Length: 391
Image 1 (tube, helix red, strand yellow):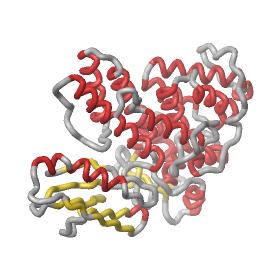
Image 2: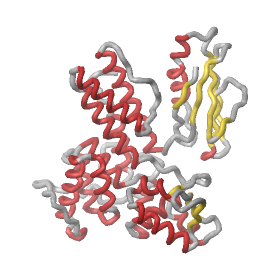
Image 3: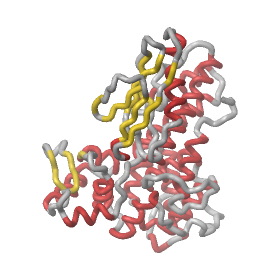
């Protein structure tokens, strides 16, 4: 990988494609099969591009036209969780959109951007799957209650939401989440399983109102937009440090990579921090950042990984790869088997010959071999991520 290549370029293109699917004028073609969560998507766009970038100004234009579909308090809370710089950019966006669209009645203490003209290219809200969340808000109103109901309606058959997960995903105050879910339970739309503090919530399968709610949202995975803005903060910090040449900046980059891993990001590899020659360490970290950013882009477009692939090296020189979804499904065969329950009873098998005997070099190559195999696996446009290797 060229040292001049920005490791975050793939992620930037993924975010541009997501916003194109919401009607933002873009050079990228609209893509993505899961709904886009608009508030964290705004924060992430500002993180990756900045407010004064082309897409930043297009977001001002889009907000001026569709601001009534946004949860402004949630947007502010998400920005405050990232950094003062992003919080200021969000306030400036709010102030600028408010000036150009007085009907929004948006107020901010920040100064609006001056001497800019909105071109109106982002005025249309497309009928895309990615825009489903916004279309639900346009129909039922932009408020915390409809956002929680939307998430519950979007859940797959086997997916349960807990109150704590709703708090983390929506950035809505915990007391407010408890109040809303309690109201929905009393209305007979939602059933709560377990204690109130850690209860699991789901729409009642036999309730007419719950059935109506399901019609407003696609039955699809929820992309990790909320957690992604925390990961992106670490990835950007690590990339910035890599662009410098001092040993201290290199150590700083490693710390930010470790922070991204600690926040739950695994990417394609869980290798430990590289050591040795500074140029080698910088190259390894740059490669890791590019892989992590690219995989995060896939997760935002198609939803989180649907399972875990475990790789082992067998004595006869073959790679044993098995798919896990909740529980192991071993078949004793040295093939790669996916049981994609979310896509139905679809099974794909692959056999990879490593050669005999299995050497340490072969075990070291397991990551590469498995990644190559997984790159060819696309069932229902859902990527399967390699997260565990045993050799």
